[in-house]
Length: 90
Image (tube, rainbow, N blue to C red; front, side, top):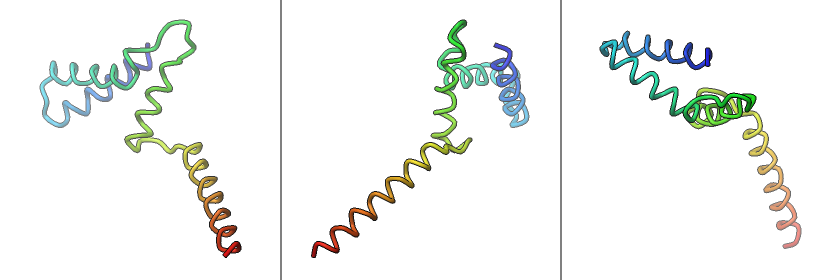
């Protein structure tokens, strides 16, 4: 829960720097944290909700996603291999 509070405080500070009122900044910050973490971490789930936040961050370009880039690389290799075989068959 402390991680969520810290994250909300940073987001709230960002909105206040942009000129949004304190109450509105706090509401927006918690709405953002709830959206990213799916309503918060569930006790005893060893942070299973964090993956939702990481997926959100990856979708919005906030963190690199090595498994996805690796999958794209494998797909590209397989596609090249298929095209090479197809050209040889002609």
